[in-house]
Image (tube, rainbow, N blue to C red):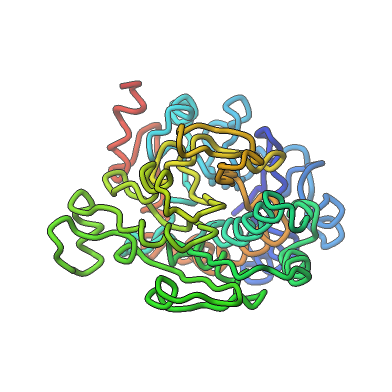
Length: 400
């Protein structure tokens, strides 16, 4: 079995990789029948030499590999027919901008696996970069506060060596008694929590957060039933929210009245209610000063996310009274951080962490005949057709 590690070709450049050099060594030690080739790259966070120094083959031609692993979408002109690919395809939600990519995958008889579709038997995602999005998102949110109120200047995350350097810089600050609220308790939310815990921001209960004043920074982390409520007033199991999201309305206003910084780490279904509405933001009792929208769904559940931002220009101002973007330093502006590729700012940490997850959860399936059906569930296309699990994409492929 031959694995190929792809060079990233999408713009803007992404320095991440699925397998760091040490992870490739571990893979070859555990499964001696596997052969690994790394496509030469001048942008990858790990250099060609770092792979070669560990005895890993680096080449400009990986066309004889059975499975090809990348991070971002592979440009259509670089797709190799009759191969199996793993990458984030951004097609399973029928994203219009990648329709042609999925059409090309089918035309070229490619077996496509998407990291987002790698789930266990309960449909829970097993791997992703979410933790690192949360880590950088929390750092950027604090950085935005410092810039907006001219209290302190933190360096950009991408200029630092990794998570520990982010924490070191944050620990030098003396923060005012800010209140942070995090929505979501998955990988993204817990990544943000990891940063706040590391710099000794105190975690408090929802009740205390909403009712008490503090002389130090505090945060609370909330799940769906703490920021949504049923229209009929019933209090049911959280599974009811996932089954009947249209029966709920946002209950987030109580947090807007006391929060300074809001960090989003939630999953948002299509029919779920808007979490942070225009009305909440425009209300005279809204205290929010920074929204770190890691989820970054434009015109979605966070009303002030009017566009995504970039690593180069991560912040913009939002004027609630006019529902429009303004300068960050406008006196009535809420600062929005809506970078949609945050893990790219920690390419080394993110690559190492992702590879470890992939080794633990996915690699065994290649060598145990996929006994748990993990690869089968993740496969989007096969033999030039959509697999049954992803047949719902047929109208999207057809251009409807």
